[in-house]
Amino acid sequence: MSTALHIRQLNKHFANGKQALRDIDLSVQHGEMVALIGASGSGKSTLLRHVAGLVVADAHSPSLIEVDGCCVQQGGSIHRDIRKVRSQVGFVFQQFNLVDRLPVLMNVLVGLLHRMPSWRGWLRLFRPQERALALEALARVGIADCHAQRASTLSGGQQQRAAIARTLVQGAKVVLADEPIASLDPESARKVMEILARINREDGCTVIVSLHQVDLAIKYCPRVVALHHGQVVYDGPSAALTPALLRSLYGVQADEILADAAPAAVPAPMSPLSPPLPPSPITPLPQFAPAMARAA
Ligand SMILES: Nc1ncnc2c1ncn2[C@@H]1O[C@H](COP(=O)(O)OP(=O)(O)OP(=O)(O)O)[C@@H](O)[C@H]1O
Image (cartoon, rainbow, N blue to C red; front, side):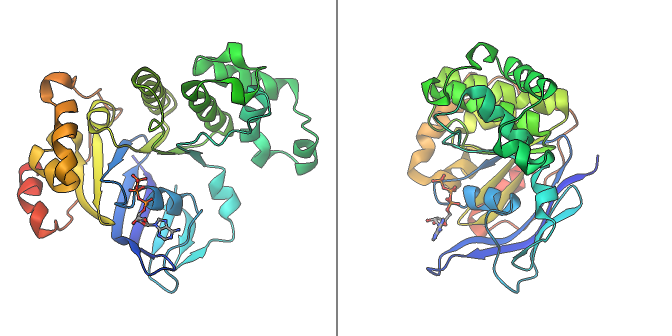
């Protein structure tokens, strides 16, 4: 396996002084499906947005983010060839990011804009084979029959599936999904997670998905990275997550999360494309040390 994502010494302070990310070191190999978990405000979205080059790290820092060996940002500056890297990275947002008034097919075709002359994009002059590609992507996510509808007329789950079809058409090697199921009902959430797992399995896409639902993280993602106050406090097999670690991560919410993630309710993790990586040699914060020791 080769490295899909490499993050070194990532720190982020926002203008208000809030430190959202602390000394993040992380590597993800091609073909992995990784869940990013942690309480609200732990830094999951901020981390994913840095990887997509939507947010810059602290200026003049030794930080580095590379996707597939290409620099996204270094030392707090976006790399000048970021367009090339962005075409490799699909971003699935919690709120879908579709253009409501445009037909679903057109929203999916947006995934092709990066590799066609801008005048064709402006005029929405897509070739028959490009439309066929978008229709095929919609068929793969199970909503080909909705292709002519305005995006605003789809359910939340269907909109999210259209957003995933857009990343398929884009040809993204790495898919970053930021709480893609947060606003969906359980059945729609399950379908979206199944689709993410399928593009990971069948297309070899590397998927990094932030989730509040620990049970789904365990079910679909062989590897989990847990954040706490902007720091990586666990990086290892999802099967080795412990109640103690979840209690440390989620505090009073932990009991609810543990009920959802109770072993009896959680099917065995899907077999990964490749075996999960051994836990990274990170130093746990003192309060996480017992849980980390058990996971190792
Ligand atoms: N633009 C910003 N300016 C100032 N602080 C910010 C900004 N964006 C995020 N933060 C802060 O950074 C921290 C991490 O936020 P982030 O959205 O990454 O967390 P999260 O784990 O994704 O949370 P959630 O699960 O609720 O989406 C939070 O304390 C948040 O308030």
